[in-house]
Length: 373
Image (cartoon, rainbow, N blue to C red):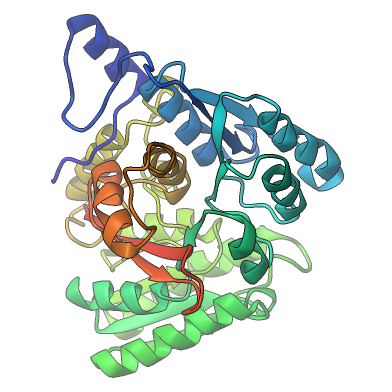
């Protein structure tokens, strides 16, 4: 398995003690004359973003001011706005990275930019109006959810899939971006000569929650594999589905090309009963190696795939690297050409950027190359 660029706190500490240096990474104390604020949810609200901010704080000691927004963000938006504005009161903070996945934060950025026009602001992501965001924010980043409607079936076919099954439910398909991704998946499968099958599960947003949906998957997946064979890729649009899908993939040997949220920590730990200690929680080299070992033991080598690191973990570090170059004037124009090499350095794999809209030159959506277990 290819080694991915991810280091845990344990490795960092041990390496520092031994005087080991890593190409492309600087773990010395910050010699910069500025700091960067990173804003995330709390650990319990969004683990990946929080751990990503902790990682970059350890990578550049003294450079980062990390703040976590209120646990109950929806009821405390004013507090969140005040927290972000407080970063602008500190003259040595020259950039703010907001990796929160929340809407309603644009007013804070507007006020921040009014008070500190020189402040570099990167969102990775927030979900306010894209055209308004692009007017005030130096760089906006998000996952390209719809484009994954192309990349996931294409990957599945390369993994040997002849059938692609899409499990969802009515309240999910009422969401425009998810319905558009499904339609894109269907069109991609037709182009590739892969049979596309859309199936509804019980809706966890109505009735008895997730239990009927998961029970249905447990019973229906074996029926579909009996009907279509093992060269079938199964995709589910809901996070709780992934535990069942991956567990059934280990049992029935079908293809799982990517989860709804592509990361080694969705579905795999529960389905494979991985024991990931607190100190290893951000060590994706180690986690990916554990998954590969379990896949091989189950006879599923090459049948399971995802992104090598969570996008929520990637964004804080990548955004910080971009912010540093913007502050120091070494990035050049924000563009696919300037962002792509930096993203590969951070993620360890190619990261592909597309403009969110043709007219927005500072709002990019990404997909990431995969790891195959």
